[in-house]
Image (cartoon, rainbow, N blue to C red):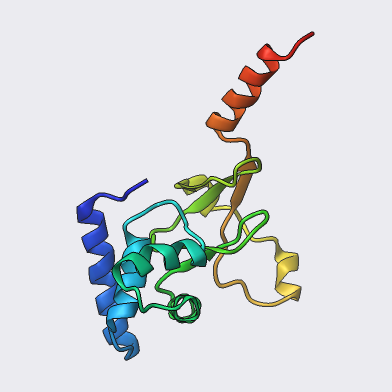
Length: 158
């Protein structure tokens, strides 16, 4: 689903400021790749980003998209959202949030929850290292898939 224009502009301003702060050149390619992510809450994978950017910049290569997404993630400008299966997906939403992932269709939606934000990190995790961030991934069946399953069950011969 598309993100409203005001939010897209806010994300692009944050991108510009972060590029300056990190000493990154704001190339046309980087800006267009980020714009694709900033305009949606779908959490697209690299190939989907490539297809969308390629419409505007036909000379863009898939390798450039992968390298740019890696750079933007390393700089904290986008988040990599791991899905249950399939390729990693990317998110330009910088707000503190978690994800709901449908185990049937792979739909990924942002979840805002103070309760999830405040979950305590178990002390035993300190044995592995220092936790910098934590994100909860909720897995289940989205309403659309649940409705399809329910509808198919009613149509099945008994």
